[in-house]
Image 1 (cartoon, rainbow, N blue to C red):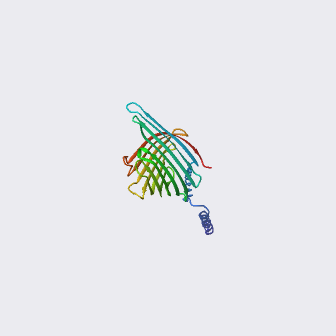
Image 2 (cartoon, rainbow, N blue to C red):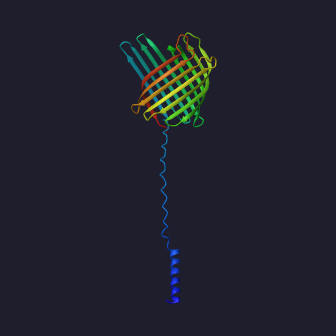
Length: 271
């Protein structure tokens, strides 16, 4: 082969090498894997159902015991809550009577009316009036009026906790004693636990300190468990303790009331 042919062959090989270098991708090169798809978005948290605009309930307690001992217990009451935002109106009436084989052993009547107005989503101002008549605790009439601030420490589901603090005035007529009147300081808590869609636990605590005689302080505590039987009928078990540090002469410091009641409820949702 002549020198000229060798030169042409070498030029052809060189040209083919350049073409393969710039036009054909290397065999070792691979397409990078596509990135994994993004995770699905988290499901949206369901919005909390607002409380009903109007809620009313009535309850009845009845117990009859016969045999070695005879006793009759009768209780009745009712509550309402009305929430025209930003206001909240609440009221309660409770009557309880117990009669054993000796005679009437207990009778009490309790009334409450309260108004709250929201200042912020958690802070409210309130005014409240309470009435108590309990002759078997030595109290003919007790009127308590107070106002102050209420703050929702926990405001959600299933737990709600509210604390109250305020000032007021209390007048009490006692059996065989002089009436007493005094400015007071008031503090309390209200707790609610929605255990399930059909059961609720509530706990209320209140402390009253009279300024005229600070040793005559009082403490009320009420806890209740309510279980729904139908959409309007519930069963409620409750315990109420009333403590007076300086009770009427001849009476005990502590009264405890445990009751089981059927509750009929009506609720109307907001607009």
